[in-house]
Amino acid sequence: MKVDLNCDLGESFGVYRLGNDEQILDYVSSANIACGFHAGDPSTMKETVQLALEKRVAIGAHPGFPDLQGFGRREIAVTPVEAYEIVIYQIGALSAFVKAEGGSLHHVKPHGALYNMAAKSSELASAIAEAVYRVDPTLILYGLSNSALIKAGESIGLKTANEVFADRTYQPDGTLTPRTLPNAILHEQEIVLNQVVRMITDRKVCCLEGTDVDIRADTICIHGDGPNALNFARFIREGLEQANIEIAPVRKKT
Image (cartoon, rainbow, N blue to C red; front, side, top):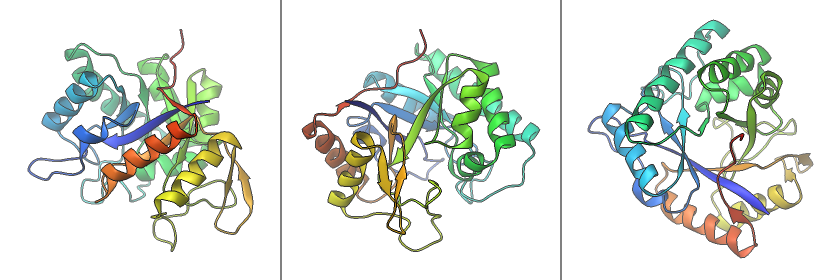
């Protein structure tokens, strides 16, 4: 079996440093790089792109809401037109850095509140999918497994990657437990690994209420901004390989 292992990176800003990007890139197969709206800046974007290319990690744009103070995790009442525009703007910014360094953009994964809202809203999802398609129809759209964003990407003709989260718990409808609620995040590495392996092999995840939810895992997200993120990334990678699951980027359309 094969799966992509992705991480949100490039989220430092100015003198504020976040994450262990260089080290984590040794354990993932794709990187979602912040584009300057929720985090990141031109210098950080260039540096992260260079590191990803050096380590042969697939590069994706990680567009979010223009909300540095809230790290893009606060909902903003944007219209579909506004969502379309901010996604194109951010893809364009990161794509320019990738091209300047001799690489090519692999995928797009919305960030934070924009991602979660697009998982439920078909109008917002369609706007994001159209933005990605208009920029480059060969890009892969990453979205929450079985969500409105995946459906919108498929409908417009994009290749999609159903994403699952290593350290998050799920609701009965297949959405992530909001971070504002108790038990939204898993901390025990063995529990996390067991959940990830089951999502890949059985295509199921046990939600907080104790019932199973059908799920598809094309790509697994691990977070790079926690205090134990590096050890966590190493543990998940080694555990998947021991389970005979190959780590590789999602293939683009040929």
